Length: 347
Length: 242
Image (cartoon, rainbow over all chains, first blue to last red; front, top):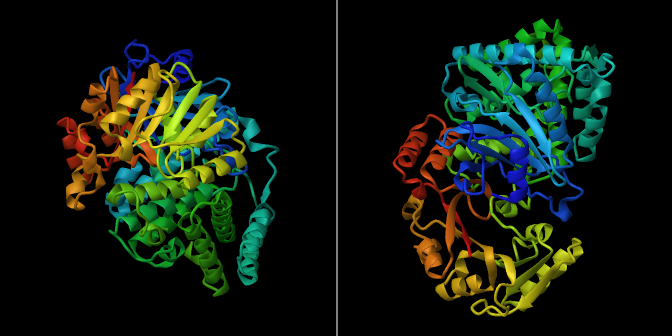
């Protein structure tokens, strides 16, 4: 193992679980995962999205069982600093001791490490496609209840996350993203219908959102659901963002597994009717009721979610298949709204 | 999302759909550069002065090496490829790279010149391995990336170029390298999204994490449990220390 990394692990008091320090001879105890970009970042990428540059790794104990999960990023990564701060605070909260892994961080001149106690268990992406629609809906509700508890505790223990706590005007919040999507070719007609939906959604009270809540970031372990990956936690405050993202990505995985094919676009699957669609809509509606949101606000929040995700992915660049599905969802939502489909009643 | 990504290549089957959804739901777009040289965080290199890239395709690791080492040489036998790579790298601001034109069989460097040498499978012949050992300083590291000749999918896919380099570990030892460590790379050594030590326990831990409860996943875990991890991956990375 590289000496700088080894020293950081020593500073972090990583002992592999059995009191045995990680040394250079323990070459087989590190499994590199999600290796997305060089550390240090290449110079020609200096003006591109670098926050996730780096890699994760799994640290194995002397017996071969994983003991820690680590994220390795450039020392300048604000996203990882944010995640370390959030998780360090939340993981000390006794109420969340079975929802958020114990986490801490260390940093050198060029490298930053987030270290979490490994959560053994089954990631939800391994099972979501194999559940019946009813089981799926029930499980999503359990996971979203955990997410809500984490958000509530975060709002109490990390008050800075909420900023000044002012209500969020959906149209104003989405203005920059809409302008961006227009600049990359979203038709004016589509924009108008989306703006109308956002405007009808009015203003909402902010609630910290996980921001990347999808099945791979949820693990079932020891009878509890654990949430992982808090890099963008709290960046979005619009309620229903997490539930929309979670329901959509679950639905995509189930659709991708070919078990319950109905339609390619999530918006179409949402409106299609049947058990799958009911599970999606019922889950969103349940969370909306917890936030005391009316139908117009739900449609506004849904529009905000799709617009925000499409913008983020398009801005990051990459091949067409990477961002296009998100942009097409926005276009489809605009078409549905223009066609006068009563989404408010459906949701 | 799924219908757009279903035509992509790179990952296999179940892992493919998940990897693409993963790419599409968190972090960077796929294909972001520099990840290929992150193996340097796994290597035990004590001095970061000079590196030599003997890779093909216009110095794929040069920029990454140039971020870590004080000076980096790139040796190739095609003058125009060398020139293009050098122009590109200097335009990106790397002043510590130097191309040299030579046939990569005998290396025009003194003994013990480099701390690190990188090599692609095409050139991993016995003579060159000995030359690499010669120009590495004691404790220096040779990287070799290659398609895995024992990958179980190779026979199904009708063979392939990787049959050229069986027994590389043995040949590295024969060339005088004192320590050889083997890693599996997924989906390939050119795009190593995951790098797994070729060790039974590490492979098993990775397979438990990465694969679902499908028949395919269970079969892979069974092979890993039996210590047959070497057949599971398309690519291997060898780190050989002088």
